[in-house]
Length: 386
Image (cartoon, rainbow, N blue to C red; front, side, top):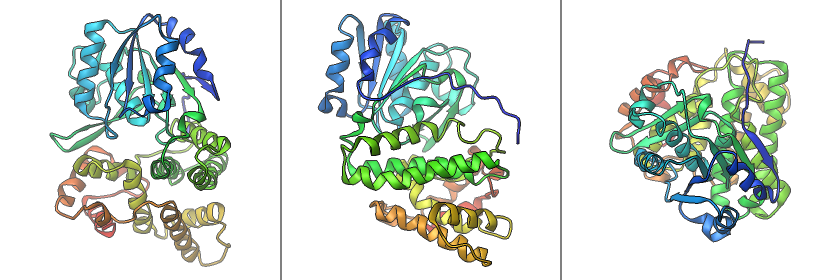
């Protein structure tokens, strides 16, 4: 088991009607609130009015319209508001894009450094505004982790940023707030959760406990995703997905493992940067092709275990057969929940693959992934995904 430091500083309030605690949460930080949200679904579902009512005695400024792949321009606008209005706390209500955007706003509002320069140079964060996150979809788990991903369409870049100081102080996680999520978005969110889990499972070295924890959450997502899609207001299904999302990417499950860069995420960031596709869809398309590409004598035992423990593939002496059956089962699951499984279906061709692959290797640490990926490896995986 590897050494590790583990501190999840987010105070999680999980369950129905936990939003009633919002006034007490906000009051401990101040009176001036920046409310950050996406395309307006929080107004259609009533969350917006609930928040406005609960915080009627507070000064609320708004930043709406955050895109699914949050833009650096959204960050700049948020920073401007925070500085001009002396914001005390950011209330991020929405999916991972809203929460990610809020994290970078929180950090950039406490410095004179340009937000994009801070991201691409991975500058340390010594101070950030407090964030209260209210997720409305099960996907990234950004409400309880220390990472954010921001896009710059002018440079065709989508970059990750990490600091423990941008982790939300509080997360109000109410499964009923995900009842209105359409089936397609539920599926894409599940693919994102599974990708986080896969990339903590396929690592150079893992622990007995870590393997069992990750496997249990993978099986939970596989079990409850179709239920949530068929029965959008099934509380148990939505709760299982939402909590699975929250713990899938904050190291709760993998402490003691020897971790490495997320290869599939790194490749998908390029797809989102160039084509602005749904992150989870891109991950689902790439994952089976990545699995086939890295399957070898060095990895076959791991993939065989994955096949047996996740997909109930019968144990046999032919580990390659087991591994391939597990990969096929993974691909079939994504197809079964309605995710398009080729880049061609998204209108993506090979015209940018070389520059995308080069940038992914340079900026995402792919040479240090579970199986190191060179530029040519990434191009091959992209082409196999067409």
